[in-house]
Length: 236
Image (cartoon, rainbow, N blue to C red):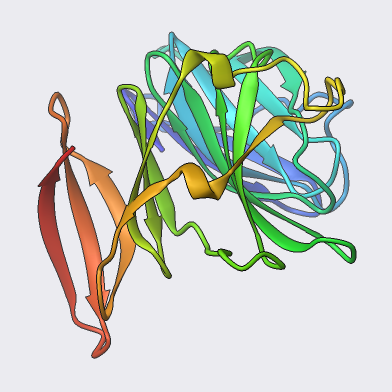
């Protein structure tokens, strides 16, 4: 991720690693990962920026965390704090994060022998991570489908699904809860993927969604059966 004079690179070398390269100083910095977070097999899987903070998404092995770093354009940035993420189930793997002025969203997948594979889109109403909800699509249910990509546009989630096409889900304030249906604060409140309204893309697969800044238009990147990639602009 490039931000002003800084390039940030996340990944893992046995444990989480986060690197900063300062373009003007021409210096590399390895950023602090708190000892409470460090664990073999974990990785920094995605990076987003909001309100003067670099937000790093920690992945794969439970528990999962969000790490917050104070941005500056002078030299090495310092960690501000970290928070533990709520869970959607066993062996959760986070693939991607999205952030807007109002919401913070994640795509992830879980797997267990009891329910099989499940895809999740989790939305938090703030970067304090207190209230959230998750839209889930389970492998063992008839209407199972996967999530290739997603965007948050104002109060709507725009979803790319290989099986279903282009989906729209309206965010309603009452969906946000501080616990799941059993009152457990460590898990997100869950909603069925049947609440998503899809427009089919017959014989084509949406592989990527890109928002056009300062508009309610998105670029939909599509691949057909021959592997030819095209782009369409759609107004939400």
